[in-house]
Image (cartoon, rainbow, N blue to C red; front, side, top):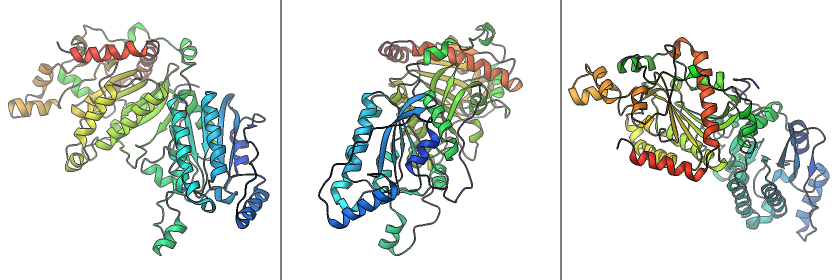
Length: 520
């Protein structure tokens, strides 16, 4: 796939539920033809009340299935994967003891065999006919998923229409990547139950896939026909730990001219700051579009927050897989600066990299974090501290890039990496130079002088041992956006390959030693 090839997009404006596909139809649409192998064992006979027995028999006749879950293995674009899927036609996809046992056994087998796991829940929730014992099955299901993820294996979730109750509150909400059908009804408490309990309808438009995506609860809304492509693209990144060296071997290498002259200061510090503020300067979106492959955009914290100032994605540079945390210059403004939610979203990306043992790339490009009552009450300072803690202690390889402006705590939160790179007109400082001037000189007139004195330029940071490599701009990334992004992409590919090839323990020890002795 060429740089900037297809990527996940959220589908907007769709309110009508899609044509409902049963588990078999969805399986046949998404997976490689003729590759399905069922893992399902026959459901053992058991004594149940007569009414429930009739319900089970009717459901089996209606769906030609013996339970509400099917499991097995297949191929997705040639890759072996494990699959667990719900069948709504079987008692509304509800989960009882037998369905839970089938599901748990499949997850455990996927873990034992080292397979990525694809889940397609659809359910009204717990099977009421089996009561509390069925309700508590969600614990065992969650434990099995947790062990699968602890093994560093990908878990992808496709929420279908409808997904409610304990299913959403367990295996439906634990994906590394979570997407949903357009128009799907998704929520915790079913609208019929809400109506019965409170004698009023549930607010319209809340329990929809589109609303969940808008609020950062899921990553995207994806049509059935696009599902195979999105899942394959995600797995090309998430499952690349064993094969990355093969892909990197054929990648384009950086050229000598990609690096800036280490002695070529060229511009003053104020000229660098001014260049970094150009509105037409390429940011993280342009970089991914131009120089990355297999890009899958993720969205939000997964806990109901989403900040347009941060872009979270899976991608590959030069064949090397990574999780990308990019401060999006397009999503930040004086009216909407980088807030605490952006840092919580960043911490989601750090956790994802840790869990899947993938490199993390942070792209720093911010005029500064929010200075407001909302930011204070939202815990901005605490989120900066937690980002620093998580990032400096992360077991995964880390690579930070000063892509443009690097102002204050919002930039600091994404800095402490194994390697720090900078664009030639990237910079890093404790405040905007105007703020530093206001503190020292009680005016804004000495901003350029303060920038020079504080050593904020990439070349100054390199001499101080903060930045390890400076990527050339000729003379400004805004004047050559495509060429600059391709140049940076080549360098990122090489740097990621170098980090992936290092011993984890030695790499973390070196990182901690570096920041312990920085400036001494």
